[in-house]
Image (cartoon, rainbow, N blue to C red; front, side):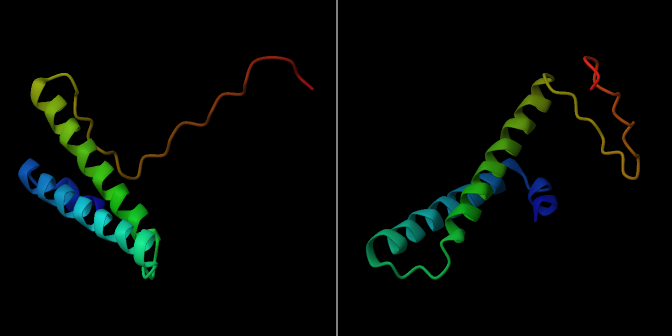
Length: 90
């Protein structure tokens, strides 16, 4: 779902954010007033979706202004092993 979200335009992302905000409002009403919400995790999932959308919009703004350099993903590359911490030995 995140990969699909990343390929959308800014206007489409804003529409998705608006739709998710509306779903959060409806779910909160169902959960708070009528107690008829079957799955309360729906609220959390939509809030995460909103945050992802806002983050992508900000990222695209920074890339467009040249303040953020887009780093290509390096699939299959293994990270270097971590160095041991310096300090007292036990």
